[in-house]
Image 1 (cartoon, rainbow, N blue to C red):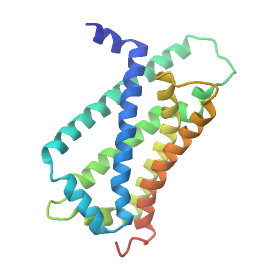
Image 2: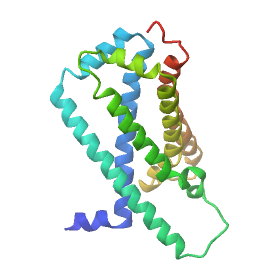
Image 3: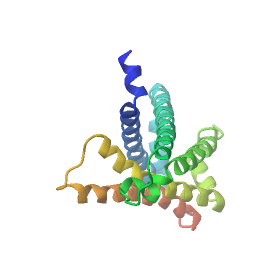
Image 4: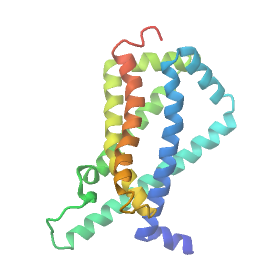
Length: 215
């Protein structure tokens, strides 16, 4: 089939990587908007969570789709990582560096694996929390733990590093590259990851520092 041949090619894997990456960024925006209600009050956040889970079928379909997107992103990323390693071994070493050879680019698989580890811990902590305990209470209890909050912040620092190259790479794959807009694009590759770090990391700091004691 043409589709199998396409996703088996290098450009096909890059398209899969970029598309799933874009979908995950869009998910992060919606998740950040929901988490931002924590700064309002526990009642507002609990109302948001209750409204979200009042549509179990939608949540189930969305969660399953998100899982497939994550898996496709991970598999395509690992294939590209090992392909690039093989190609780099067969070429002459050059000293000229481009954006792709930045720290963020070289550490993409490692930051990605750390983010995956965080997601597993996050799911275990929140998704499988006791049903008789309000999610707003679970948030305060977990993020009130210094070590959990520290791990939470470290994960979003890893996401910041990961996205600072991943977002740029995604735009290049989609052909968003023009001298007139490259300065703006380079700023976006920092501003968008920074936005997520401030929102999600800010939630952790809110409880870690005791500011959320009356939440």
